[in-house]
Length: 104
Image (cartoon, rainbow, N blue to C red; front, side, top):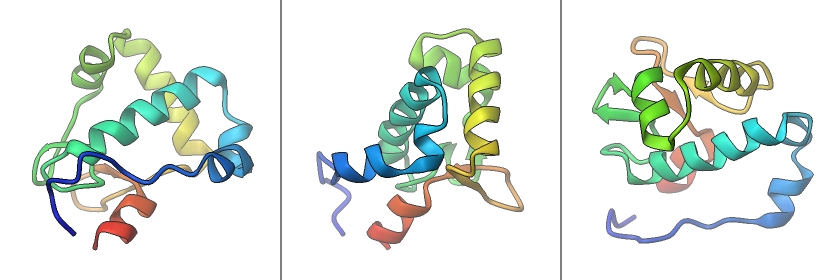
């Protein structure tokens, strides 16, 4: 798939029917859509990283979205406990299973 795609497919019905997402707070859901957008623009599409294998830190993510680091840490923990994303074992980089699957 071309790296130059300016958009990603978004299915409102999938977003609204995902129980794990719906059980998360509104703030966590807002963070998740911001993270999805960042992962779409990432050097490795679907991964939340600065460069290949280098994760975006909590502080960097807070700066990117205009929130406090404390809030970002809490919301990422909420999303992770809901199973909304995965992490690479060796680096800890957060990734979207769906984006990775559909861009492979």
